[in-house]
Length: 101
Length: 357
Length: 165
Image 1 (tube, chains in turn yellow, orange, green):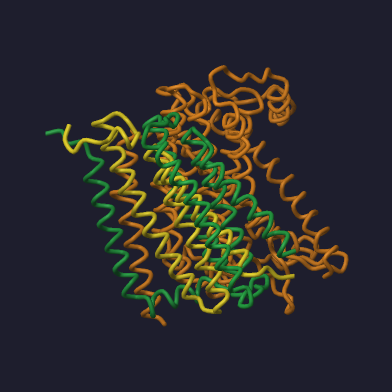
Image 2 (tube, chains in turn brown, blue, orange; image 1 turned 30 degrees about the horizontal axis):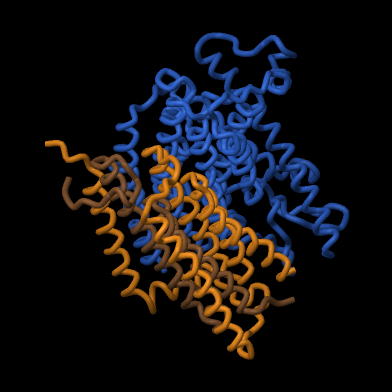
């Protein structure tokens, strides 16, 4: 009972594509950030699948780095969102179109 | 062991563990009311059965028969999902805890641990990353509380769950770091492996528990963080009744409230289990040689239960003693005192382990 | 068994991802993202990456998503509102997704002879070996990442602090 690696890659590509679609169509800043997380998760899956294919643990390490960067991005991004919300009182990215209030 | 035997043994272990856990949860509530009552110079529950021992049963019947209100203007799906999520996350982590050594019954040998198996050499073994799974499940437990507060559409619930999620995420850091010292000394992440590393004794008397091997600072950090993780006094800000009515479960009634209640006590039991496994040697303890062999076989379970109830009593004792922290005090304490202390403990332990190696 | 489990969790994953796009309420999107992350952790387990799977649950589902939900609760983020920009994106985004998907499937089908079947738990990744690799071969990257995290923490503190004089 085996699963071909292409199945894993297809799932990974699907997650990435969903992330891209969400990033392009959604207008809520928080949802945009979540779409980015979805893309990162899709990439992580292909890292793990290729690590298994190549029989090396290096892919696992890259997943950790992606996770750390995602965590840092979430912390800074959400802080920015809170700061924007304080001045603009909106989360819609289209309404945040002025450099200065 | 064939697949069918494995399945049957696993199901029996799950049934027994779950039954015992739920009973312990119910009687912890009774114990708490009784002990706090005595500390405040009153009787506590005394009407239902001898010493009020049937009180948990009466409470359960009451919760079942009460009207199950769903307030209007709640987010229905999430509102119904939240208590179940909280309870499931609280009950699941007991599966990882090694409760006792390998037992031999009807020609089958298996450790008293749901996820444990016996390897070819007859030694107990379990999931390699058991401790991390427990931490993961604990961190998922935040969702029950956070979603309950959000979906209730009430300001008290929202404030309570905001406090809860910030508090639990903050104290999880110290909780995890306090366990790193033990992991450095035992060099395994498997819970049964950690128990195994504490089995020997000094001079045949003093057990080599990690608490006595220099991890007492970590133990205190763990206990403080655990009180915050389980939302108990003095850190019960999420349900502070003087400010927030009942915090995140203000809008819940009947069985849904009971599920939150059980989740809190099940979390207390889990935290006590992890504390005794990590610092107090789990089910290890002195063997008493003059007892008959049949009784001696039960001694590990007795030691484990004794340790759990020591921690549960500590919870109740502190509830009867300490007032509640203010929220800014809680955050400052967690980040400015507990977190640096936990880091220092990790560094000192790492140097110690490296120096000895 | 491997195929069955993979299909179950892949369906959960894909369903969560689609649900993230379809839902108009931010909190529902966040919840479906948690489903995606949880089932991804299971798929990692199928490939034998047990440490990565557990870390995925602790970091992603247990910390990052809690932060998202915290912010959603704090700002009381309600429904998604459609605007001119989102319509433009819809006309370019969804065709783009289709084209990208067709190209991806085409590339995969072209390399079909190289398609290796993976066994259950084909590469066992225990914590000690991963850690050994992290602290030897990738030590420099590890240190640089820690500096990045430090900068991110300071940035978050500075950004989120109220600038009252």
